[in-house]
Length: 256
Length: 259
Image 1: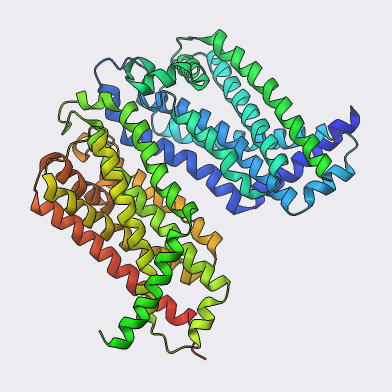
Image 2 (image 1 turned 135 degrees about the horizontal axis):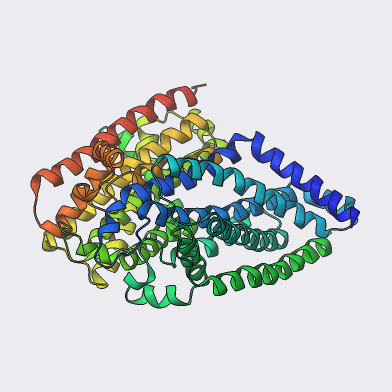
């Protein structure tokens, strides 16, 4: 256990250090969510006036939750890019050689992904509050919302780690990114599920991200909804993708 | 144009077109990605057509214009990456040993963008119309939209070439993609200008040329023939293309050191 902790701490420290000191990694991670937030909350604010749109907390808060979840997911994906780059440059193999408990490598990347997400969320939340975002949820509600975001971040990191350790090249980037992008945008991004119609409503109704988004929006508006389903997904998905990531680690070990 | 220049442009244009056609990895995402977003946005934002003052009852028609702009953004990356690869592999240095004119090199390389723009525009318009988008300007409007789309794509392609010549790196050109996406995001992409309520966003979108390019496409799709809006769209595209070409020519002079 001591080995596991030491390895995960070392891997996390290196990843976070790289993230904070490399502008090419830091700036996009901060800027992207802000642009999405500005574009959605600013450019689409009139959507809050659409007949049937019932979210008293306001459109800024409605979109904040989506961008929070999106940045959580993409924080995991970008960490996957880092893993792929480490294996491409040979650093990943050195990790495998040096680590006595290799699960610590994945845990280390996971911790780094979470710390990256905290930095992004801090900036995003500050901008949202300056932009006049209203919060009707209590402190406990907000803890619920951020816990969901953390679970999404863990799930996405484990997914991306599984891909990165199988492909072991940055060329696997689209494979990490595209499914996340698709599943996020096939959820009720702009309006609540009830205002969607046609095929997008059918897809969004069975999309797990919909429950996570609705729960998050319920928390920020102080009207919690679908909490049970959201947290069930938040627990099951990391377990499933932990197995996926462990499989990736085995493949990386087998590749030598 | 002299015979010599015509030959030079022709040879490089042929190479550029063949190279584009041989790279499905360039063509497929630039067609599929905008169509996917069109499908998602037209479903997800259908209800905004209920807003008073929204110009059409079909969000698909409204959003179809966005695909042409997204296609043009891909042109920045594709043309820039191709030229950067020529720089990285030494092709440009070999060209420097020939009596090739700079104008021929740039014009020839843009042929790939032109071809890609044509394929993209046809794909977006045909798919959009097949799924129920309206084209109020009729058959004539179809051809004007294609012409405008190709003009915009080539104009954006010059910016990609400028970036490639300045940086000499494909990775750096790829890194520009998000920067150009910002211009699209901070425009009247999702709602018409008159319905953007956030003051600062309205101000930015009002001075963003992308809003007026979108307006030109939308005028043909939604309103019919609006000469002022169409002329403004072509004017902006031509101005961007001219500026991009001038900047690329200057960067080429630095890059293409005659030996």
